[in-house]
Length: 290
Image (cartoon, rainbow, N blue to C red; front, side, top):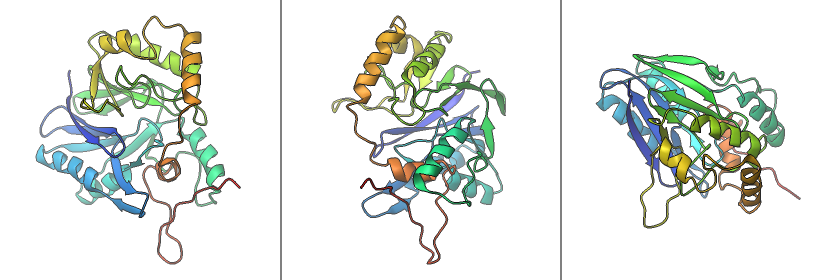
């Protein structure tokens, strides 16, 4: 069965979020929702998530899953906001992410110097997804495909003929996701992408990001045949050693993501903001290098 998919582009972070269902009035999943954040003034807002929620209401959908493909380093997740909004409406949804999040949480707990109020055991999420696990979604099934390499918690979700690939691959012109974050591994990513390339040719790959040239529109989906024959960094016949060398060389030139520290502090908590201080204000930490 082919799912009904509505995609939402967050231009400030070049992020795609996806709303997946069987059609009007059915069960649905939200994948990689975005919370608006302006680092210049610290303003957090929900305009993008509200647009997604409006689509849920317009189509009479019952959101059952709020899925993250990984703990993102370039945008804040709106999963917790959506979870609370849907719960207040009497339609509870569950947050889920790959089980590798535990490794990610342990690393960033140390970086941010988080205290005992943060447990790096995945418990901030309602469900940790294992490779090969199948989650029910009405008449559809969500199949989890572990795709680490960009990060150690990378998880793709296969729903019918669609696969939601996170930062594993971008559009063919943009190539693949970087592998220089903690837990990243270009050789592991090569094998993850080959796993995607081995799927049936009718498969559609739904992207988490696209970085188009100025004269082009961002793409939310790419046919598998086009991806594996035209990806700028990894085609079906690319040798692993060549890819690893190319990926590592490119990663060495890339800047640190602009929202790295704000995003990880929120996203390892399933989109929850850090606890407020005694004065009622929420603060984000920035580790300084002195």
